[in-house]
Length: 292
View (cartoon, rainbow, N blue to C red):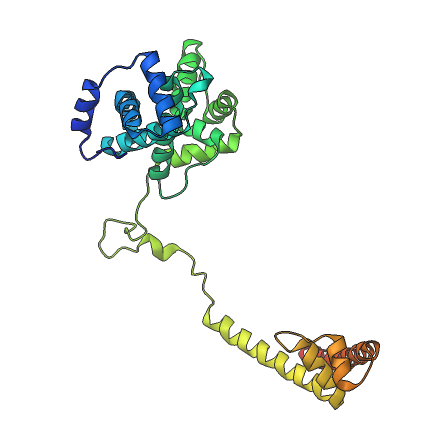
């Protein structure tokens, strides 16, 4: 079933004219949809309670989202409630739908509040929608008692009231205090002023680092070639097949090819590595001696 959300005004007018369902009719419609997937019953159920969804959407206009978008999200929450509603539980559909409608609207508001994710946990969501209200109440109560609250004390009381960590309150205050702005905006009113994006650190590898990395890589390659040249032909073959292939060969397969036991191949491999280690250590000592 599709709902037309193109005009929130026309939808609101239709919602206000929709039938009011008594408990018995509501229950029959819910059973018909759940057990028989009767779309006509679903349509009557959704249409009857669309006024509830619109009323709840209107409460979130102060967060800056377009009313039509809020109504769309409220409608989606209402349909999700209808999909999950179990009439056997003895609860009115309107009571059950309230939670789903509110959750859908709140998720939409938080997703669109900022390009930076505002929060995802239930405690962060509660803080987002209650921070200003709790703050205002605590300030009124303090004023009535003749007490002046500093910012830190106020944050601590908000955290305790909402039941969230203090750093969550500090983070949310920052998110709610300002809006997103373009990194291409200039830092001053001067047209030739530097853009904010120019102040970001360039995380790409710099030219001097590229040259140094290439030099180090070539040095290590030469060291490795020198170490390999110190091995005999059979040892080089074992090292190459065991360590320099994309899919290293097993000791057993090398043993079959060289007509040796698996244990003997392992011993030759260990001996080859010992020779290479000795050669590499000698080269590193020579480099350190030159640097010193």
